[in-house]
Image 1: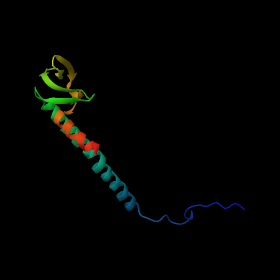
Image 2: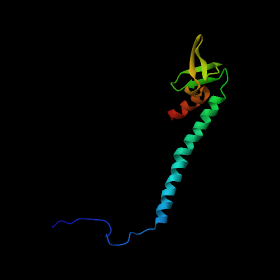
Image 3: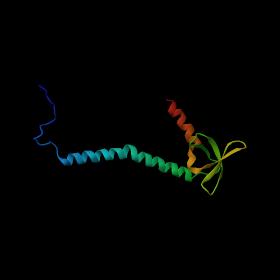
Length: 112
């Protein structure tokens, strides 16, 4: 004799209203927005503001981890950074990761 285990009886009503399902789905979307989407957009906005406010002499860190000082800001969205005395690179503005002082402040926090 084979016994097949199933959920609630097929002929009975499925308990719960559609309103509860809609509220649950809406709550999940709200939680995703609060914990995932909102912080990412906030960080992107801060990054864009930082890149737009760069000036000559600012110490920066590139996405590749290269530390340098902004030597010249060109009109074609590129920067000339000096990585050591007499050595310069030309990079895109979008390759800037963060300010050097911010990078230094994050290192002690990561080692804890």
